[in-house]
Length: 323
Image 1: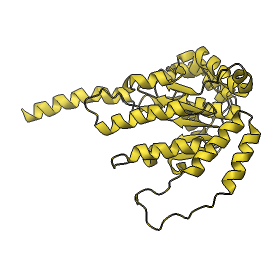
Image 2 (image 1 turned 120 degrees about the vertical axis):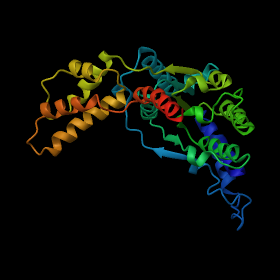
Image 3 (image 1 turned 135 degrees about the vertical axis):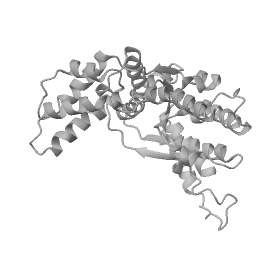
Image 4 (image 1 turned 180 degrees about the horizontal axis):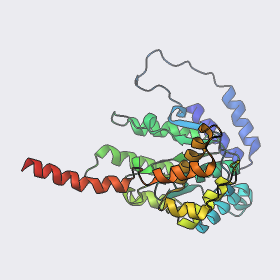
């Protein structure tokens, strides 16, 4: 605990350009002997105690310029990057760069890519939270892991990404939730408030209505990632098709019309399937034929709307059979 706290203080002082103080802390810390861990542990189900086991560290590759963003999201991304690149100027006037961002919207429309793009633009480590390693079944275990997670990320500037944030940021007034999740949300809010500004927390949710109202207030930027319209899908398709060795005769706008209501992720999967089909054709199948075959299959895909439409029929059939 002492070492983690000292490392967090050093990172904070270096972020403020107080290198002399940070160097003194480093020398003092190096003089403290490291005590080996005990052979037995009070929490045998915990594999690691430094918080690193609750995250995945990924190398950011996506650039913000590659994304098709709404005007508010694009302008907010530009301001966020500018604030952190020139944080010393803000601090000289008594301000800190904003560092808590909430993204909401349907799946497959760029929330994860936005977070990765911010990390790439600022050349920061990109940490993705692992809920399988964070959420425990024992009383208080999740809070203990959350504490170790935040203690670890405080040691260096980084982008910390919570996908599916409603998994731990649920509304505390929900009568169906246990007291444990309410304690987790309260503790999470405290940790978010105490994070230094050099740790950028980006949380994404597909169900903003499930988040606790106090969670919404903790975020300084709240951005919406709505489903793209046909024109935006056409632009997205055109960017992908430009990288193909052969360009199909069908224009991206026409392809977008045939795809109908689709997310960016679905459009990307469609394009990749076209190329897979063409590649496996070994020269006997042209890009136009591959595109035509995939368009014919598109209408038969399973969608959430189709599943929801089937459920009433199933319920009616079950009621008829029981009667």
